[in-house]
View 1 (cartoon, one colour):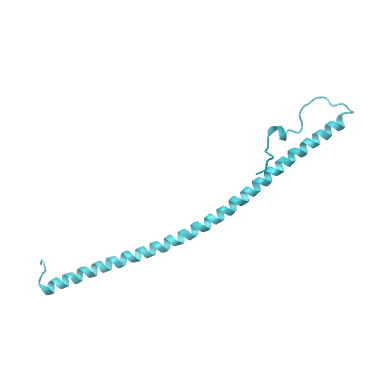
View 2: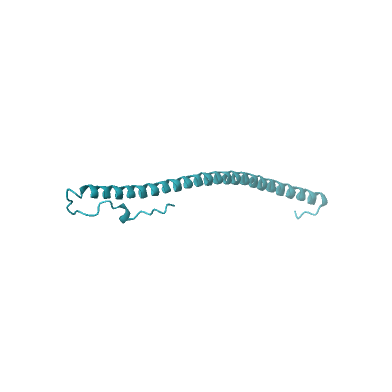
Length: 112
């Protein structure tokens, strides 16, 4: 970040309403111009720093969005796989129960 921190003092190019004589007008105008240039320089440095910071934040945001998109895709794939495993487990449990009942019927060990 710029070391040219904006302050009220730096931004004040005109410092009074004193009467300016004809002979000192050129010197006062030069002083005002120099102060205005310094204020403009400080403002430009701060604006440029802000532009750099905004660009860095935008780049970070794009990276974060990409990461979140990939995480969402992985979660969707994980959910699909989990649903498949749950269905297989349910089907297998039902098949095991049917086989167990059939074996009990055949061997005569059923509670029926």
